[in-house]
Length: 256
Image (cartoon, rainbow, N blue to C red; front, side, top):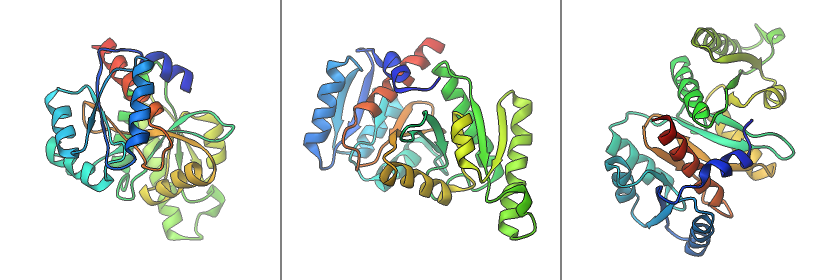
């Protein structure tokens, strides 16, 4: 089962080389690094230049990197340049207040726009979860209930696309179900939830995290091999994000 206890148990590994960005909030970043080092989550290096941090991640000088307080657009552009990507795909690890933890995507407004992109996200996310020893149970969301068919063309299309995502994933051995618009049921039953598109996903993420007092450990970039965790500058501490990055690095090394 996904939990902060599971993440912390897999995060201890002082040999892991982790970078974190800093551009403002220096005290917060340094306090987070100090706590993470004391917990033996790895050897942690601070970067004021996102391009340099991403380059060291690509060349293998770092095992993992965390955006920290660096500008999101600049860092994401650096990832695209350094890794030759035409798009970035991310999956966040969230825990609603009084609820259980789950992976969630898409979280960027330009992500998860097609059936193929959503299928790609689930496949990569499932591999990520299995590295942590957790079997994925996936809930696909759409814009309405079955009984709403015919009321709005865009809602009909989102439900059809959700059904197609399920159809493509089930033969791959990934337990997947279309939960329609019933996010509350998906959050109860599943450890991975896929929103209808990036805009609705971003709104769900922000509502849960900033208004609903939910925890967000960060969002893992799915379509690069090294571990990169995107974070919000609004976080009060990056210790849990560092722990997640370290846990994923350790699990990857165990697999190989």
